[in-house]
Length: 283
Image 1: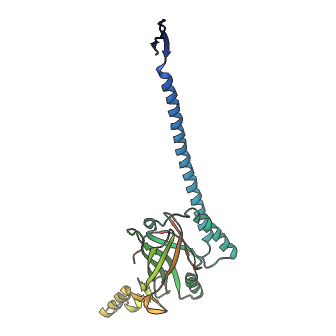
Image 2 (image 1 turned 90 degrees about the vertical axis):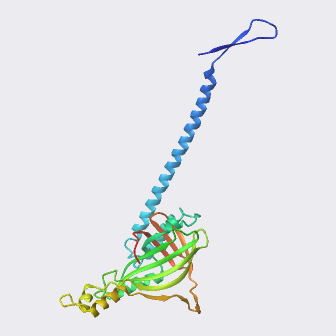
Image 3 (image 1 turned 180 degrees about the vertical axis):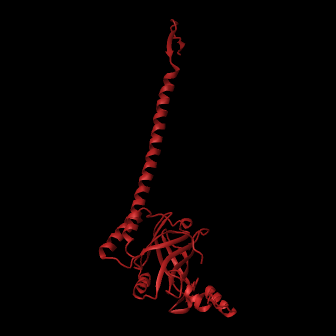
């Protein structure tokens, strides 16, 4: 619907009528608004698609890395070509986290070792492969830092066993505890505190030897079993140059972290580590 308005010229002639359509301006406005709205929606959709593609790429790269380390026995058996491919996959994945600060809430929890090139860990695997009386089970890193802002506690957990004497793979636990502080966006400094042996689980054969099931178990034999099960040995870590001081520890670079994968590098050539999220363990 149109409205007529009169314009009276100064000469006093008949009024000039001008037809004004009130919807003309509104239609243009609506078109501009629609364009802006469509552009905004398109930008949002494009951002969502980009995020999904990026997440898809990351998951593929993580799967590629896990596939590469799958047959290496956690790093014990690798060829130069395998190590090169693994390093390339690590660097490719690390690029997605570059520059981001460590998320302590996400870091908190238990992580299972899938691969390492660290000599001090590989020597355990080599010993287990060389000596039939020694087994190495799962290895974990347990971070306790959910309610912290600049650090926390890290516990390196090694489950090991002596066949026939202890339970398979999980007969005992070697625990190396350290405090850590965040010193830069991705670096944490470890201050080693203590080494302990605990959670000893003797085999059924040894239990039968100590306290035969077919004979009345004496108070002494039951006490021996209880002592073994609850035994804990703690050794504080000291600085070899000055026994009165704690060990100086070292830098640990957390090169990648998300909800189910953690990559780390021991600064100074100490090796790389690939971890995946694990269920909580009781220590």
